[in-house]
Image (cartoon, rainbow, N blue to C red; front, side):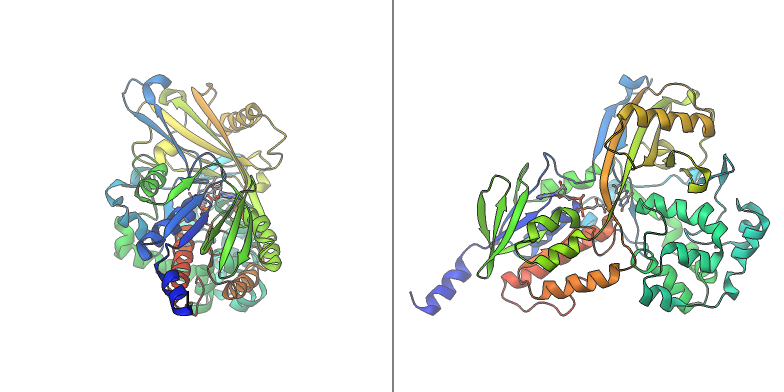
Length: 494
Ligand SMILES: Cc1cc2nc3c(=O)[nH]c(=O)nc-3n(C[C@H](O)[C@H](O)[C@H](O)COP(=O)(O)OP(=O)(O)OC[C@H]3O[C@@H](n4cnc5c(N)ncnc54)[C@H](O)[C@@H]3O)c2cc1C
């Protein structure tokens, strides 16, 4: 066959793409690829016996747990919400036809508590993760000494130094202490951030995790003034109608079910990728049973830690970079009680626990109060986040015991729960440390020399679900250009 003939043959051949990992980023990647290259054949290799990765929901029969009402009890085992970015949900949700199934956090329970000197105390109105947005509420309500409150309010007079965050990988701890003082950091910013990132504020870089606050320091000269401005404009626009957080009527599993149903590609469960090698313009993927297959393009959506091994034969430097991203662990204990067994009014979404309080738990979400229809009116669903240290060596019973002891002390709950479930999220959350931005730039550079390879997951471009979806979709866009013989876009995945 002449050269032209082989080009035509190549064009007519059904191109094969592998997506390794069926978490939300892998599913989003596969769906986007099906839209962009409907002629391609997509295989998804998933290491575990189920799809969804960290996302999963268990739906129980409330009657069986002592409720007088018929209906479901919805337990999210991993994430329980999607954070709206600039007021918007990922487009994927609309494309899946799920807008009608979105639920908002309950307005009548809005707010959170923080443990202060052994007691639950309200987080002041307007507090925006790293600093106060409502100075008067802060002055009256902040769970800090008067000196600590005044120090935080002096923030607009602190010289802005955004270059520390942008160029020197300043940590969240350093940023918040510098702008608002150590008391606010220890008592509020760190426990709230630990609830999101699973590690302390010393471990994560502010620019890589919460760049909007660095931007406020740069443009407004003050985070407090930036927060006030953002909160004022949010109350005038859509932000007032829709809260920051959203979920689905039957929990986050709805998103995974909808993705799986829409996918045409074949999902191979219990098939972990073991090795990835280059072969000409394509790849050879080897699974754990040493069975190999050729693909024209590959999207790794396993998360950085699990991608490092398979990538070693393809590009050692890329494998090292991915393997160098640390991960935080957590254990969640979800419990169910009858409402009359809870002496606390449950007038918030839950509480966080500063490290200085020296307790065994990090936070608690009052799921049945945070979301509508998670439980019937006579049942209460509470989730407790325990530290991930010693995750292997401890029995489930011990985690339940510790969670119950803390809830008894803080909320007066002494009755045994009617149901409990312990989930171990081992090395689940990527830690964006001080060198993360540099690492990310290096990975993006390597990707330019690896046509047909896409990286998804929440390891590099943001730790939350919207960012994981976006990383998956951008990996699909990159790979689709390769399949169509188009040059890559100048920006890689940003
Ligand atoms: C306890 C907890 C609470 C969270 N809460 C929230 C929240 O409320 N809101 C939010 O936005 N985010 C939250 N997150 C983060 C969110 O869960 C992640 O952003 C998202 O699930 C990441 O999806 P992913 O597809 O990138 O990775 P994963 O979910 O980790 O999926 C990766 C998949 O790859 C598979 N895999 C691994 N190795 C291989 C291999 N060798 N071959 C093939 N497959 C492999 C895994 O089995 C898994 O299915 C939370 C995370 C945790 C742990």
